[in-house]
Image (cartoon, rainbow, N blue to C red; front, side, top):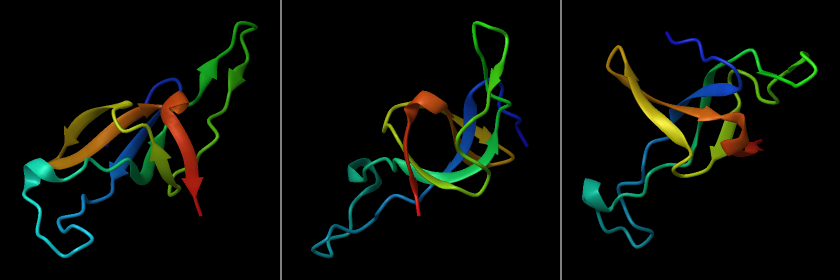
Amino acid sequence: MLQPLGDRVLVEPSEAEDKSPGGIILPESAQEQPAEGKVVAVGPGRILDDGERQEISVSEGDVIIYKRFGGTEVTVDGEDYVLVEEDSILAIRS
């Protein structure tokens, strides 16, 4: 498994919808990229100008919404993940 550095978060993206709201099956090229996923690992946090470390505001297991193109896609052991910076996280889903 990867251990994110700094203020980065490793996210397992949710599956893209393969049907439209009307029930039409969408080809993979037409499916929207998910902007929601489960936090798998978090970095230690950003180091501030005064040398203090600012902890990340999400935890492993949280389901988050992040900027659609705000991360870097990575594959580890055949699984797809997205590495996002904390600034790209928009909300925690409850």
